[in-house]
Length: 531
Image (cartoon, rainbow, N blue to C red):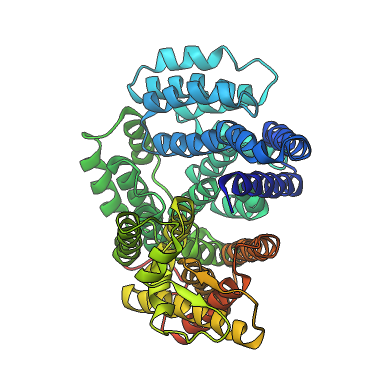
């Protein structure tokens, strides 16, 4: 399979999935993305009819500029904003607004300029920027009004606005509005109102990004005094938060848990070495101490809180970012390195597409009447047929392997990887002997091992689901189902790809991980710990 065919597949698959997601979510702020994916889908189908040998290259180039760069750029922009590097974020936003001028991206640079000025304690200039927009009838105008109140720590006004606006589409689909509204209820000690509002709208928040949902959990759990859960979120999902912001939220959870003296000491020690934005938040917290959350929460909202605690815990251990923070995935890096070394050996000994070279290095050859050298079922998994084959497999290993290694530990993970790959090649030999073909076939590649990681991921998620069902696990299991379904279709329509090896790798990976001991996840939910 060549690059042109793979790019056609990537563009069509991502466009169809994205359109389905946008239509299902009914997110008005994604209209720009709706147009982009419809345009890409139409152009790709037209190119397939007119010039199929170049369709993937042209459509792939458009997809790179119109989809991949804006998506990666927006993720980088979000990370910079979380780290409060507003000026750098503004530079990125200026570039992105030309690639994707819809969905509120044109106004992002102005918003970030105001935040940067406020962070330097230049409030008058920040207010001047936002005031220009507050009387307009647009989503950005609403955001400007809210930020003006937030900069002045007018949380009582914000809480009143929150109660009026809750349930409105523009409010639900704008993460800045919703998250500020949720925080305003916590700041004004309306803990039960905060929990009810978050529970009612958490699904909508998840539609506009995992990070936004995680920010919502951080806010809710901090104002409910759940110190351990707040620390877990900060140590995993928000490692890039500035130190002063991390300390502020830890102090907030301490105060809400009833550890008022410890929280005030923490805030006082922080006030002299933080940004202007954090300093103003500290002044508010010291002037208006939080009530003890445990004595405020009702029996009804306590059940809501228990669900949110469990969801946040599963996000830490099973979410999309699990395995990407904390300990380094050295086994995954080591396996990628071994595959790259093997590929380098291919290049210097005759070429990565030379059949004789590949066979001499350990490729698996299956032909009628030909005795199988069984050691090749292992060595063949470290060889690849050309650069594209290597890059695709190593990208898959990097994306999937880190989570499985995080959950299993490097020893069990490496064993699962090797057994899945070897078994996938053995299955190919078995199928050929059951239904002999007239010509022989040469098999190489780590895709059986990588499909083993797909199966292993599914096994890990299912075990977590059996311990305690959650929306986080449901979403991730659905994603794995989509990955497997697309892989099956891809294998069936692509003659150069072995469906047998991929299916065997996925099944064996699932079974072997089911039998392995996993890292346990503490699911006990309760009140705040003792000081």
